[in-house]
Length: 168
Image 1 (cartoon, rainbow, N blue to C red):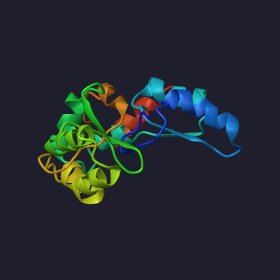
Image 2 (image 1 turned 120 degrees about the vertical axis):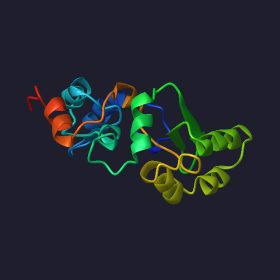
Image 3 (image 1 turned 30 degrees about the vertical axis):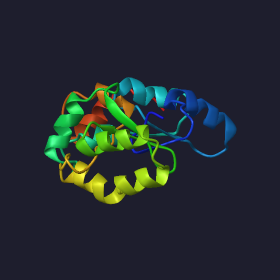
Image 4 (image 1 turned 60 degrees about the vertical axis):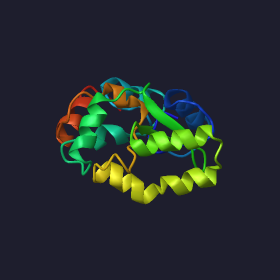
C-alpha cells in the first residue's frame, strides 16, 4: 500500500507485508513501497527481503526522465496530501493535479471503477503527467515515502547513500 501507481486491494504497508510474504514463500522477495533512505532500505532487508525497489526515490533522480516540474512537485509533496481514488483493479494515488482531483470527485459520485479507469486513461495520462509535466491533463503517481525526498540527486549518490552501511 506504500508504493505508487496501482495500489492493492488490502491496505497493508510494506513493512507489515514483507515479513508475512517472506514467511509464506520459498522464493526471493523484493520489497517495494516507502523505501527512500538508508533506514528504510536496511529495514526491508532486516525483514527478510532480498531486494528493494525504490521507485519514487529514483523518479526524483537527476537522470530520471521525469519532467522537471514533476521532480519539483515530488520534493514538495507530503504523503498526507495526495489524492486517492478507486481504479482498476483496486486503487490509485497521485500528487494533486487537475485530473486527480476530477477522479476523486468522480469517486465521490460513486462512478464505477470502469468509468474511473476510462477517465484516467492510464498510459496516456501517466505519460502526460510524469514525463511531459502536463499536470493539468495528467497525474503524478508516487509512493508514501515521498515525504522523505528532499533533493534531486544523481543515481550514484542515491545508491551510495542508501547502501552506505548495508551488510547483507
